[in-house]
Length: 420
Image 1 (cartoon, rainbow, N blue to C red):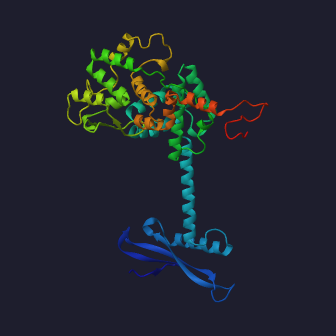
Image 2 (tube, one colour; image 1 turned 60 degrees about the horizontal axis):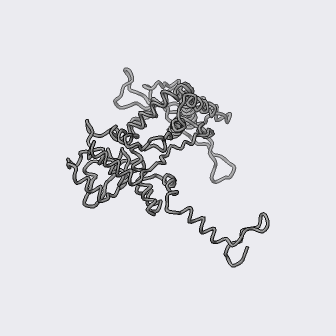
Image 3 (cartoon, one colour; image 1 turned 90 degrees about the horizontal axis):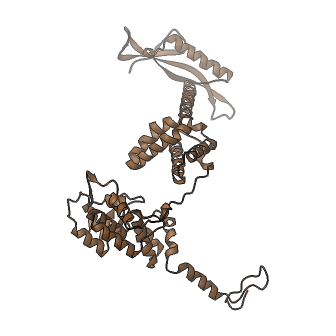
């Protein structure tokens, strides 16, 4: 260990590095020594004088005997006046805190200057591309570019207020966008702020929280009768086996088009009567095959396990064949119907499956699980189809009543032992 050497400045000494040079001389490490008062543990209220030595740094870092002495004088003066840092450790801590405060302020200002456009393109969109389906990302990007960017894109995130969200809503409405599209645009805006808050780019309350979202009702209400379904299948069989088989599978298992298009042979277990539905809207699930569906799948040419059951021209089918819509038109299933919710489309097959289940007395919770709904509220629209449930409830109530109120406001008299 190198020996300590004194300098011409009192309280300043140094030691030399054994090998490292600073110019032609060996590098020197400087320290300062000074006295501090500490409490006397043996005499309450008394203090003891104690030497303290602290390291400053190397000559190669810019320290010299004179600069070390200047720092020593500063520390001594602070001790004498009881103001300012009274040790190098304290001074360094104050300096570190100052730098961290400055850094935090710079970062805050940088965050606050991030515009809606910059955050969406630089952060939100790449994150969505990594976590969402391509179709969802494409739709979100289109919504942002066409509607959100013109209305909000130039604002820093911190400056977007509920008023601006209302302006976005109005511009979409003036642009003849449907309530569902407006709701989607506002939901995307809400998601952008949620992600920004999660990542620490935005602070405060989401500005969409005070904006009322449209509540569109785009739920399909039409379902096929069994006779209509038979006629549709018969007509399709003469035109396209693929379209016929996909329609039959939806009618018998309640599958969405995307779920059918995504089926590969490794997902099909005819012996057990099971289909594995992967990456559905509310997560993966099993679908159960009817005998009719089993027989249909047996007639199809089985491919490799990874091959799609229904092949498109370039692999996976992207959309339903127009053959389905043309056949519906030929059968006049939509004749005279203007409301889109009442028109037959391919999704009507899934809706019909659910409706038939409920009409057969299958509990709503079971229907929910078979359809893969995320919540029971999505399934509750079928409640009205349960066999006689509402009518039976009224009849039960009517039988319980034994008379009408004699006086306005009097409680109904029910068959409960003569009590009111």
